[in-house]
Image 1: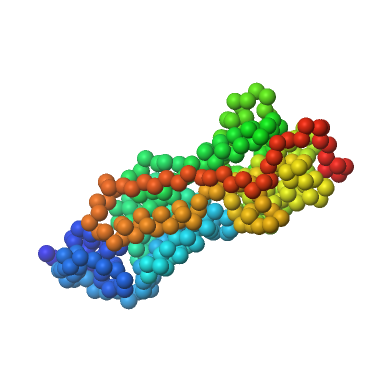
Image 2: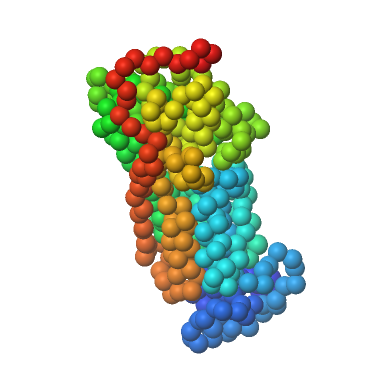
Length: 360
């Protein structure tokens, strides 16, 4: 076997028939990682035969490191997933590095191109890849798991949720209580991705199926300075938007695209002397802190970000520690179903006409 002028981990991986991540961890002697004697032998022999010399360049890690790719890390759902992945990785003697795409395909492409150079052991997409074909090609070089809001026909291990089901559950819940005039408030959908659109679509479909029901969507574009998951700004925008909703004297309930949004509506109602749920029912859609605190008690949807993060790390760790597992052909898919949490912020509508106080 001829020695190459510059031998890469990928070269050794192809020669030893293992993943580059396995090569990296064996050659570094990563603590806590166990590989069969046969795998270690093949990697060592391939490295010697190809003339591999360990690089002292920066950009490698002392412990196995997982790349966690998120749209944004500011608060909210994705931060809970990232925290869960990090906790599970730390328990296994590994670290994480958080990389934000800002929902930019170009930025995601740069991140994927740099993963091998960074020497990460694997990668988790917390919002599904923007460029699916590039993600699949990346999985041929290192372990990859995707978290997606819908099942995808990709040859990748995945953890999925169903955001359309989230919208269906909350719509059916309010309709069953007797609400027939409901406001749906959303903030910055143009920057939120397909999950938000799926929730809204489901609510609209449910209300369209009821000729006696009315749904009014109040959509407020987010300024460029607003980062998704930003509590203070989202709450304030929702507080102002709810004033427009309250001009409808027949309105009985609010659905808010996020719990942060619902807090703003709750504040607006309180400022006008209106009560939840006696005067208006109010619900969120993602069970973010502090939805369960006394004085808040918001009915919402638990999308299980902690469990989803833990499951995604379990799938990835199996790939990392089982180099013989067939890539792209032996695929594992885990699905989580969201749960409605009734905390008492919704009730049947009042029968008498309701008129918002002056100044609403």
